[in-house]
Image (cartoon, rainbow, N blue to C red; front, side, top):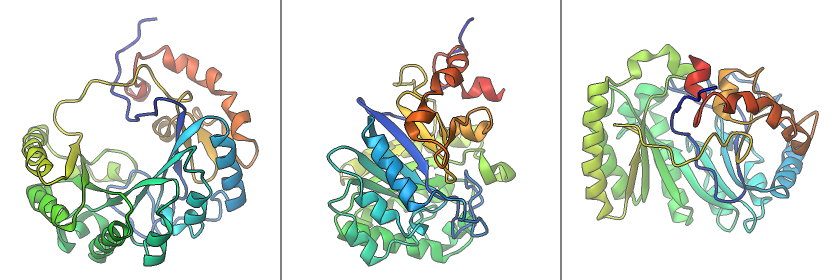
Length: 316
């Protein structure tokens, strides 16, 4: 069988061990129009994995080679036990990264995070002011809460990265956004365009034309050089696609995914594409090690399809 080349892998697994991408809840206090997981305040949390099972799984994973946890949602800090979960992970064994909208980053939460396995928090900010943020996030106060969260985290000594999604409503203000973040003391930005998944599928108007994407890529390249002098790193995924620096498909080898309800898969994107096909099982019914035993059966035909990321082949 001739393999297709495929796309660049969306993950960067560690040199040793594995990464677990874990959506700890699908509940969110916001209903953003570009949300990849269709999270909202209407989502029930009753099916989320409970604290004891969560912690038992974390211990099992770190004992079996997991070196990184990427915790997201929904809004992960909507879980009142999230700080306890992070604190339970041995910082000498694994690293933790969290994505948040900032709403639940109280002063107490910010001050509890230094000294844990947390290596970085990424705070989402999709506007340079309240009005531009509200275009996709609905609530103007979401800008204020995110800014306060960044300030609290930086003051507590927590490394912060800010994530910014561009669309036609804010694309003309990217330079202003970078200036605001630089004045706040943010040292890292990641800037992306809207990915057509989840709720964003219903909002094609949020996409950027190919020509405008390339113009923005050129603008961001200039901004990268400008703000490098001020100690702020800017990464982006616009412009020409980059070649993959991950050999083959790491799904089920150095990358795993856990859904809010405890479902385990080899890859979050494969799971979202076809849950039935790419579900290894559930942590409420089996251990991570038991579920991992099914990886080879699941992934062998997938790896035969593509030399790199198989998503374009499977979704075509």
